[in-house]
Length: 335
Image (cartoon, rainbow, N blue to C red; front, top):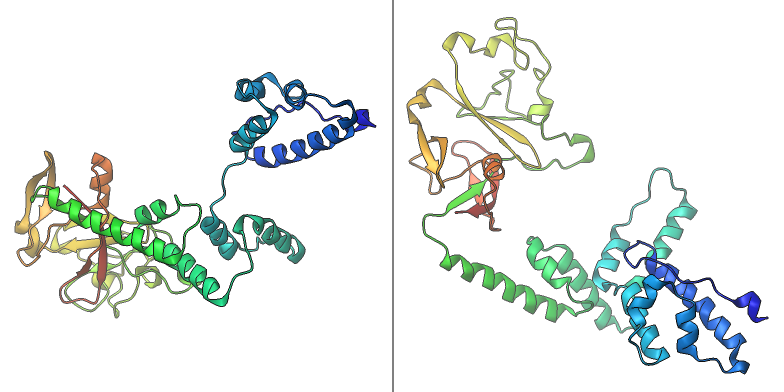
């Protein structure tokens, strides 16, 4: 009987995606084999050495007994699962277009074991739900990452850790030079429905002192809804605006583009602001800047920061553009 239960030699790279499943299956077959030959009283450690490949043997060659060898292999091949992250995956799992209901339910069930659901009281259940929502909704990804380092924790512990990390981030700013430059990008509020979502290169809006749209002359609206988006001007031949709002005859204008993950905003500087554009240096890098004496802060394009590989510290503050309804938020600050 033992020859039918004899397992294959275990030879699996612990860095492969299915290494944990492969180990669990092999260990089960090896245990069955040991039980079938138990009457012969074999040395379990020597038998284990005989049924692992050389690449696996190097992990356990210094172990003195069978139990420590198995525990060593289990620690190598079975990575600890994070309960909080596993529940996040379960709660955010979506059905693919090619999946039927049975396949979707099977995928959901495959995520259940790592969630470690147990019989708890109503109070414990509400605490776990609050903890999961708290970590999932955190604005700071740095704080979320630090919390996910814990395999399991309750809401109070998560809150205390997050509070300490937030305070440490704020206190660390006092060690920075006073001449640091905040880094921000200008963007519209995100679309409210999936149908209104557009790519960052398609969604553009004009920032101006008046209410009409720069491109069509009608009431202000998102750029992707503008009727002149694909129109060709009969005056200058350029694409993107109507003839009645064409300004080619007034001379060239200075424009600056700022890109973000949500949208691309083009801010047009009229001729009256031409004298307010000057040459500056930020961290020794020459730049063109628009002087705004009414602004309480200095802002810089996200593209400039990425191009020069400047470090960005996480922070967020609301920016309100004068005489318009546009609002934006900074992505952080650099120095």
